[in-house]
Length: 315
Length: 252
Image 1 (cartoon, each protein chain N blue to C red):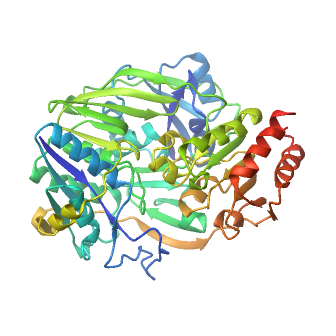
Image 2: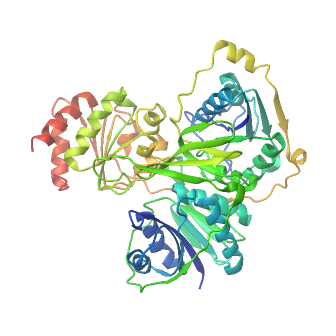
């Protein structure tokens, strides 16, 4: 049976949603070892087992930036254990670890995978191109294969697996590559996290000005929704990068996605087109966003949104 | 202080992209533009270099074409550019790209390397980290702010629910998010000066790097299409359609 390593980062004391997605997929592919980065604990480890990990490498980097020392530890271990596949997510720390590890091992990385298959002599991944209109299948031989999968590619399914065997992974001194995390700031956020929300309300250039983003927040609040944005208004500095939905931002798959003043550039569509129900408001009747919208309103966001806010607030 | 900023010329995102038959490689026209996200790295580099009496060198791998994209970055104020162009590099994977860039950056010498978090056309999103590993320096990634005194660098690193303050000694690699600084628009003088600035072109043999691994695209297929639904012209009541749909989906 193939050996598959899966990177799982801790979030709020438990395995991240993305990590559980990757574990759920990985157990179809082989024998799963979770690389768990965080403080850890019985509950967290049990959750890893319950999603398919039969063993765990546990690493806690403390105040060190984890990527360099973790990549060094994993490279040494990979040389000894020769896993067929090392699966991580298209996410911040995942990308840091994957990049450094690949450079150490002298292997490539297949990024942005929406599916991954082991073929016996290599790995094959699907990734969406041109805003999700086409699917490219990439192949890589040699090994171990390092794959970054986009969030929301695989459903989380508990396996009912038992508590895994835990091995503590020592993180070596990465010398000149070390960096220190001196402070952590959690930004006040109303409503759920963008990647996990059941309802997402996003705004784009059609809002006209940074102040108008307030309309997005006011629609989101009564719906208990997360707020998102297009790359255009993130680049313009209206809202932080963390809100960006799209190819270079977050992939979301909520039950309801409301796109206001968003034309639907390929860059944006790839991050949200798999949402359950899409509602779009844009004044241009030919905007590409309408080609994926279940309900498209051709109208001015400055008229429609205030009316919508009033209707929602008066319920 | 010596600042190297990695930049990339890409086909204009406002034009439709096409793939070469047989290889499935992206067709790159002679006329390419500076990847818009690179403007943030260039601006950051210029500001840090100015504050620390430094220089800014642009580093780019890919077909040079008419170098219009590189001139855009030079016009912002960078001092010079190095372009690595080689037919053998077509279709290179991320690691080969990083090896080539790392060798060229190592030859150039650096205190700080700045790159975007990912390119708009390839977006593998791992090049800055690979560069850091190959150069044996820290990778301070997804920066929303960067400060340096010439010996240490401190960034705000974007996280899922906020940011971390991360610190390291120079030399280092920093990847910056869009919005880390407000990029300047080139002045007329900047554009004129850019035409005279040195642009050095080199190939693999100049660097002594093997072409290395390729990622093969085996096939391209159409994705299942999502069907468009109802389109309603707003005549003052369209908001009610949204409310009705939200009710039907039991969100409210």
